[in-house]
Structures are given as C-alpha cells and as structure tokens.
Length: 179
View 1 (cartoon, one colour):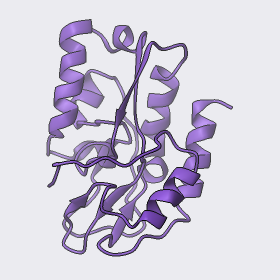
View 2 (cartoon, rainbow, N blue to C red; view 1 turned 90 degrees about the vertical axis):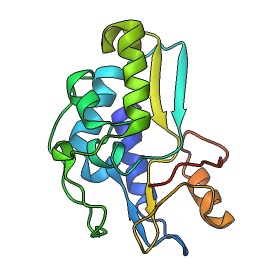
View 3 (cartoon, helix red, strand yellow; view 1 turned 90 degrees about the horizontal axis):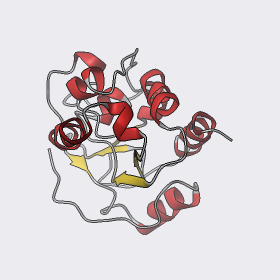
View 4 (cartoon, one colour; view 1 turned 45 degrees about the horizontal axis):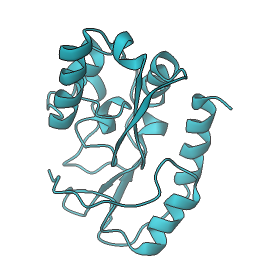
C-alpha cells in the first residue's frame, strides 16, 4: 500500500471518531486539503529515508490550511513547490476559517522547520532524500471559542481510538502551543 492509499484510509477512519468537550470542532485536512496533501506525499514521500520527523497535529495556520505538515503557506508554496485546491471543512469555526493558500497568517513552526531545511539543504529535493515529515495525529482540534487544542487534553478513550486507527504515533505529548 502506498502513502496516498494509507492517507485516504486514515482519513476515512478518523472521520468517524467523535470527541468530548473541550473539543467542539474537528478539522480533517487529509479530507478537505486532499489535493495538496497527496501532492506532498507523492513528491516527497518516496522511500527510503534516514529519519522520520514527527509533529504533534496540524496547526490552524499550517497543515489546517495547506494539507502539509508544518504547512506555513509561503514555505509550502515556494520551498516545497506544493499548491492546490483546498475546500472548507464541513463544520467550520467562524474564528478559524480555512482559506487554503490564501491564508495570510504564518505558521511559526513551519517557517522554522522549512526555513532550516532550506538553509541547510538548499532545496526541498535534497532535504527529502533523507527525511520525511508527518504529524502523528492528522486532526485539528478546537474548543468552542476557537482555541487550538493539542491531543494531550482529550479523554483517554479518544486517545485510544486515534491510536487504534493505526496512525503514526503511540503516545500523546504535552505542548505549550496555543493560538
């Protein structure tokens, strides 16, 4: 099975999950940003790799907008060479609209990661000869007010459900990231 097939299967499976408060909104960028996400997998996901770099889950101004892990719009478009149509999620928080590659906010972690890759490797192709980057949780979580939530505050049943989907990670980590 190739990465695109794995991603589509994962997207279908996580779309069936439900979460308790404080989670009020869940975005699945594997679904609504499928075009750029799959372009990323096809272009940069070919094996073998020396290292897999894991992010926690999509940020509201990164992968949530572009479908690419650490998906700062400018870096994804200009350095990684990825673009494409991005739809709106089925249920969208008014404070966290998905505007795709029209998003004007920067994803700080994405700017740092891809800026490092560009500074040290020169091209995305050289970076991806050895590395691949993915989030171990593909979903964006928000509370009723639109605050970005990382996977650690979810009830344990939700964490187990995500792990049971056979995704990339086996544990949840704490993060000081907030929006």
